[in-house]
Amino acid sequence: MRLAVSLLLLTCFTRSAIAQETNWPHWRGPRQDGVSMAANLPTTWDKKQNIAWRVALPGLAGSTPVVWGDRIFLTTANGNSLDVMCISIDGEVLWEEPVTRGGNESVRGNEGNWASPSPTVDAKRVVALMGDGTLAAFDHGGNTQWKVDLQELYGRLDIQFSLTSTPILDSDRVYLQILHGEGNADTHEARVVCLDATDGSEVWAKKRITGATAECEHGYSSPVVYDYGDEKFLITHGADFTIAHDLETGEEMWRLGGLNPQASYHPTLRFVASPGVTEGLIVVPTAKNGPVFAVTPGGSGNIAGTGHVVWEMDRNTPDVPSPLIHNGLVYLVRETGQVQCVDAKTGEEYYNERTSGGQHRASPVYADGKIYVTARNGEVKVIKAGKEFELLATNEFGEDQTASPVAIGDTIYLRTFDTLWAVRGE
Image (cartoon, rainbow, N blue to C red; front, side, top):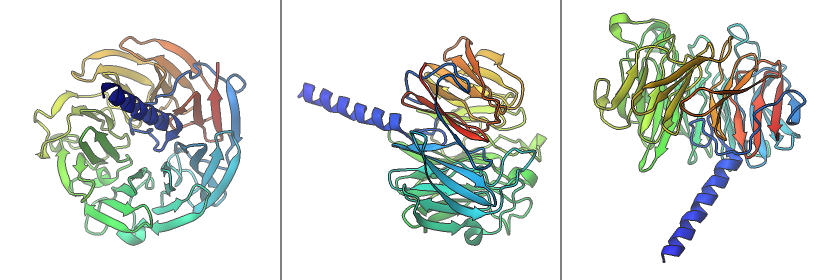
């Protein structure tokens, strides 16, 4: 009996490992945490070394690709169209389908465009949101399953740099946060929304009330599903608060305030980085050199100042890259390329090192004992995971990049503004 149970557990673990090795369904990976089970990944590469293939892309976008089985999906501008593109893991373009028209022009100094949200995928469909609020689902062959206009359903978007929040596809449900407005709460209400992934119909929609004002109402971060043990819930982040919601009803479970204190209120503290998650811990970034909070899930009401807040840093938040948590360590990458490693339980700092100059927009990824840190100029620093800083390599293509790395099997997929690269082998 004990042998049978052991074999069953081994089988379950193997199947789970295989699923995580072959699929990258969300821009932050299988668990939405930036952690990959991939092994034997390259540490060094350039345009000639360790390149399995490359595919030139038809237009600009900074979104991260997703992978299911032998297919890679990404969003991209293409002339006056914003499309979903499917590429095989062998580098063959399989199909490209439009989602909406326009919005291909860059915003805020070439930071992105309406194709900034990343797609999300499961075994049945790929779902893509564009910055004008057009949300569409395709099957893996490129056939449109449904399309909805979030502005028609929930009011005209009032957000400075377009809707960039990436949706979540989970258990035949699509979850979105629509955080916008600017003193227009009556006509441009922030919402958390759940749609049926089979036809795009509404399952529930809840107003997200926080008291944020001015540009702080604009949210550019993405929601996260926390899924560990018996706990599974939705996390939304923006408009001065991080809020946990029941997946079935959308009802608020608890919220974390104090991210933008009223006594020193910052009217442009727009959140871009999303929370980092691991079992028993949620690391909450803010913006503009503000604080970082580490909280345990649970509680009710506003958990600020309660025992659920296990540590707080009063400054040095990542502004755009999301936190990475692995093996009891939290890695924070600031927009300047400063990498900080702290203890997940206590917040004790182990190191704080500058890796390179220039902007950093992509989120760090752990894989194969290494941390991959990507600068906007396409330079990827490979750092040894652990409490001591060790730079293993610096790699670059000379192409701008805001997409986060994707690591599956023995391959790293890197999406620049111009190209999708498959990096493989030593």
